[in-house]
Length: 249
Image (cartoon, rainbow, N blue to C red; front, side):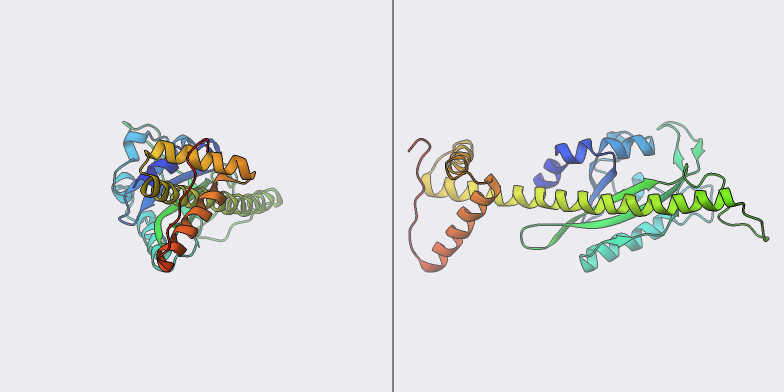
């Protein structure tokens, strides 16, 4: 749980223009970034800690609404396979304000990606969605009878699809960065635990010692932490004893 809470405070997660929401394996919303709040006209209190389909239900006034069913199937696929799932273009109407019953029709391009721990287990799903409404405005998606679509409308549709592709490409890059950040936190916490156990120091002192080791060796903190964890694991298997210098030694 702490790792997901840390992700919610991650500068990359909070500063990106891509709209992200994170649900855990119980489908409870654990993190949401400002971009997602902006495009959906929601507040953190509307979403955080709530089951995703309670916080983001179908429109009760639309008997053909299928957003919940489609998202549920996609999340189940990600949690079941550990692989990214790209949903088809989805109609979902969002409220104009938290206390308003008026709704604004929107079209979205969603993609769901697994977030894994250091053992490769999927611990959460990163939901990215891109608002495609403006890009496809004026293009007829479904009509009961044949219609004539102008060249300008086709260009708009092509632009919309291109924008969707670019959005997902950016999402893939961001997901990879977020995965690395999540893994780094796991490894760092493990390394701190090793230092605390070996030296009997406080976690804060263990962290400063790891930083000092990284500075002295001109390496990334994540790489030093990984080495500490791997060394400790090897020692446990071999039955030897290791020590690490105290800060300033």
